[in-house]
Image (cartoon, rainbow, N blue to C red; front, side):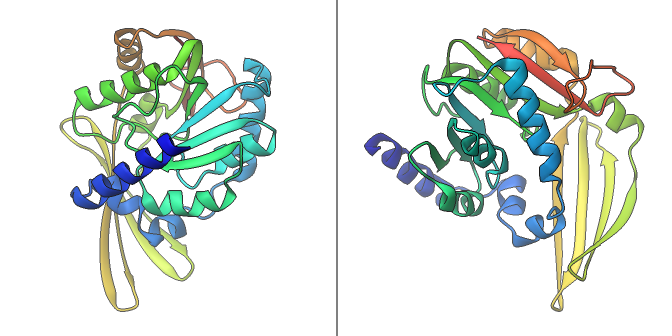
Length: 260
């Protein structure tokens, strides 16, 4: 516990002193949670249930939820009896999730590009496209390498990412969503350097706000290279939360099951 407390304090200081990247600013905003308040927990729980069956999670396993957000996957796993640690760069997310902490569930501010622990976890989960946010390929590689170092030998990394090919081919350039009386004007585009850019503009209480989301359109072959360089081996690739087979043009997700 003293080690975790020291890690937490270190991350809080670094988090406060460092200029926020887009995801730090947007994910800490209350408007992020308003826009996405209707995310389907039933779908998330079904995915977790399917993974538990497929992978054969046991009560003795230790699980790391990497970029855990407000903890919806970690909290549900803990409700199922598992020992779970959630880490996220957003102080607001960790503050919210920490109210659910117990002896087998803890949350910490941490940057996934840096090693959180060595050889500690049976499973590392990176869910719901909580990847691809960084400005360089080296940073993405660092995040995968850090996840690999957190795994015990024989442990598994699960990366749940959007299906790049389907998203790029079916991009909706503009839409308006009304949530809690706020009109969110959303535009999407593919940048020249291969990022999916979502710009979010709205007015609330007489003030204009502008945020963006930027996710690298990482292809399957690039992920496989990241895994190999981190000493990991891809064992399976699914295309949906029901763990259907992956189909490049049709699947909604790329769900990698990777072993150390």
